[in-house]
Length: 178
Image (cartoon, rainbow, N blue to C red; front, top):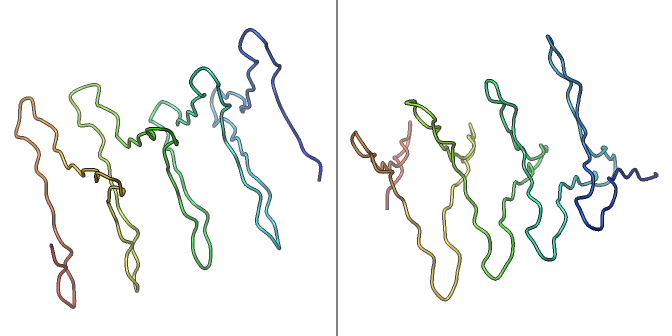
């Protein structure tokens, strides 16, 4: 089928124009949803969905910012596709360079006396098979990278602990800690 291209105007000396796709504002009800997706395919792979900023030869490449709405903060969910055999994979990789980019996963700081949000790294459960593994490793190099586990400093209370615990078992032996 035919292609559809939506683009803003070019500029030789200033910024090119913006492209804005949004639903209408509502005063009392829920605002409309915005769906961007490729179509399904019966006999082949469905189409990819690319979200990419342009390159910059003499400055920083554009950022990609995805955020939920404010209020009671909107959630941001990233989910791979489901399958009857093997579900899709989620890959997060920093940019290639003489020094590759960093990857940072963190919760936001609290702006008052409340607690900051937690960060949970957890594999999925399986009622009959094995639950998924969690592997943390640094890459191979002429000098191996360190793995650091640090607890934040407390300014007025007891410092945080590092707790490492192997899994229990209802029928067999508990897991080992080595």
